[in-house]
Amino acid sequence: MNKLVTEVLQGSVRAMARLITLVENEDPCSLEYLGAIYPHTGNAHVLGITGSPGTGKSTLTDRITTALRRRAQSVGIIAVDPSSPFTGGALLGDRIRMQRASGDSEVFIRSMATRGNLGGLARTTADVVKIMDAFGKDWIIVETVGVGQDEVDIVRTADTTIVVLAPGLGDTIQSMKAGVMEIADLYAVNKADRSGAEALLTEVKLRVEQDAEIKKTLWQAPVLKTVALDDQGTESLLDAVVSHRNFLKQSGNFEIVRREKAREETLSLLKEEISRTMVEKILGNGRFEALIDDIVAFRKDPYTSVQEIVGTIFPDSE
Amino acid sequence: MAGKKRIKVIMAKPGLDGHDRGAKLLARVFAEAGMEVVYTGLRQTPELIVDTALQEDADVVGLSSLSGVHNYFFPRVVELLRGKGLDDVLVVGGGIIPEEDVPGLKDSGVAAIFGPGTRTEDIVKFIEKEVRTQ
Image (tube, rainbow over all chains, first blue to last red; front, side, top):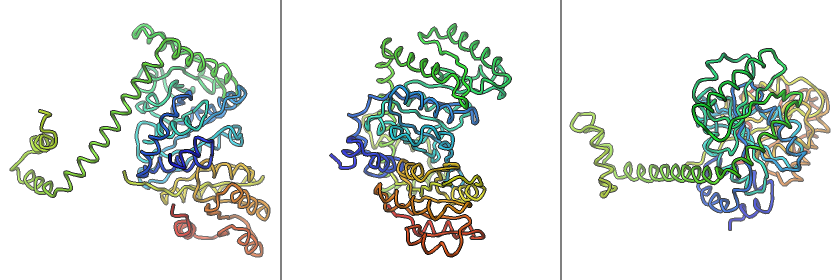
């Protein structure tokens, strides 16, 4: 097996950090490394923390981490912040709020820039989760970028997702909208010492009751108050996360979800690989530019042309 | 898949001084130059800074000091980095640092000291030139 992978499995922090970089850079070797890592994954519980900017995700991540450490659990944290769509650079500032957790040798924190990926995570965040999992972290916390309403990639990566809310950011209708509010296994109403927190709590509880009416799901998302800055409500929140984990295991949902995720992941890798290799080939044979000339001159249309190209690659697909 | 290497910088303020305007400005300058910058905040110990560099697999550690602790903190960061096998991490410093301290800091392994008035584009250029290629 590859030396770097072996070192990661033996617990080398340095090797893990290097491997994450290779994967993050989508280095040509990274697929081979991830393949070697995969059999060693599946042991960690992956906790997603998402919510609008400024709701307190990073601080809450720090407090949940220290609570996990009190329970003798090792923790990996992936903190995602946006890359600039203009320069490609990024200012990764989540660590500032994680001062309690950093400095603990059983906690590994990695900041990731989105590098142009939409959806609240970087393209390779799920792969980095696997590396930390194989390394042996008991828990992996993934903090998304500050999301609006539509960035729900976290639900495909995390076993349990906490949506963090804070008072003062919107009215009832906001909590009824689609997207982020649909993915919560738990809600944390953070900054609960501020005015408006009770009203927000009531609103979100109402939404959860509506969800129970509409969807008839087995799990009803608890709504908990926290004041992350003062470490209030952290233990109860973590207890609720553990209850959700137990629910997943006992209800059999865990295996169902795991299969769904494996399917989705494999399918997306397949699509990517097919599109990469095929498009390379098609662009490489030189006829593509001639085809474009025909399309520009209205001798051909793009719709039929694409069907014809696919037909020549997969003659049986008709 | 194309490799998409980006320079990763840790911006840190060791010691107890609370003035981070310069450090924050540089964090932004580096991000604008296309780098990925981890800003660690104030009052970092050398141990914390080196742990951060290790976990983040940093290419560069930028240290800022305005309170006169550079002669202890900067070499200590270099020493701890080397102790963890992070030999190829570029360490640069800035802030209020007397001219006569610069040679000693460079001897200890700090690659460059950028005092007040340094043009930010010169700092960016220096990093881009000196940073490890792998």
